[in-house]
Amino acid sequence: MEEIRYEDLGLTKEDVLAMYETMLMARRLDERMWLLNRAGKIPFVISCQGQEAAQVGAAYALNKDKDYVAPYYRDLGVVLHFGMTARDLMLSAFAKAEDPNSGGRQMPGHFGQKENRILSGSSPVTTQVPHAVGVALAGRMSGDDFVSFVTLGEGSSNQGDFHEGANFAGVHKLPVIIMVENNHYAISVPVALQLACEKVSDRAIGYGMPGVTVDGQNPLAVYKVVKEAADRARRGEGPSMIETLTYRLTAHSSDDDQRQYRTAEDIEEGFIKDPVHLFENYILTNEIATDDLLAEINERVMAEVNDATEYAEAAPYAKAEDLYRYVYAEGDEV
Ligand SMILES: Cc1ncc(C[n+]2csc(CCOP(=O)(O)OP(=O)(O)O)c2C)c(N)n1
Ligand SMILES: [Mg+2]
Image (cartoon, rainbow, N blue to C red; front, side, top):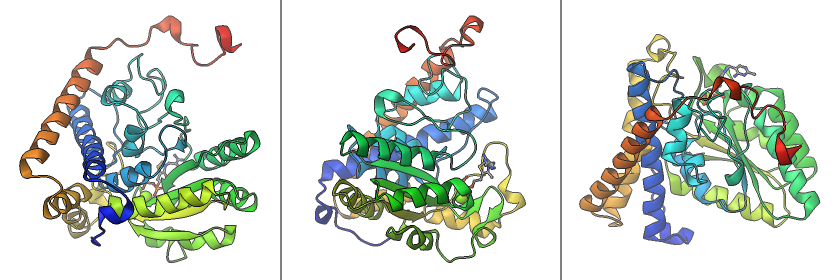
């Protein structure tokens, strides 16, 4: 991991620790969800594990009180930073009525929360790219200066929506940041069988925007490039494409066994470069926190994960008579 001085990025020790705590929250929630899935309590998990640094580093570089995010299914780190709580996410995992994403109707990972400007996504991968571009166009038309941030996997960057969205954003110089979280697999298909070009970011030139590839294991490296992209977007200089290189630490989802198509060495390499551990080392060696303070943060996170689990497990399911809610406009919305 390249040593980046947080001070050089204009960040404080408190910022670094806040980033760490959000990364850890994402990791611990995800780990708990796997346990709950294997215990037969929740139906499905699709993990952020291995990608937390990219997600939190990027989200931290945005304005969470103003910008819009169109996250993809692994983005626990993004939605946590934008205001979704551990309880919100567990309510979604248990498919309970109070789930703010969809009232327990959609699979976990389909994030959406209007009050925090988190766009609701669809199951077909990459549909969020044109959505985010449309939001940016709406912002331009209404004279707002927010940035629209969208993420996807590298496999999904082969789909038409990605290219159509990127092209429109490039032509109209819209304030969009397209971040591709390259974890080197699209389910079981390795990246060498997905792309004919070397990097996903090589595609940016075709759409008239800068494209960079960055170490996605390092939240500070990602923060730096997303901050630059957000500043450019707010200056009216148009979109950017960012590729973050990461490892997927789990199987594609709880319905998959990656040992069928990945070698033990490949899986092990991801754990050696685990971004949560790398960032812990950075924090300790740069004397940003002591072991005791990190232990305190860990305890606080675990207490919240436990609370969220208990709360969501005990929460009621949606009532049958509410089936059509959130489908048709109601009351004042009509
Ligand atoms: C249009 C469409 N095709 C196929 C799928 C099934 N599918 C879900 S996730 C996925 C793999 C996506 O890989 P990648 O974009 O690299 O993201 P990752 O899961 O690796 O983060 C596929 C093929 C889908 N949801 N939508
Ligand atoms: Mg992938």
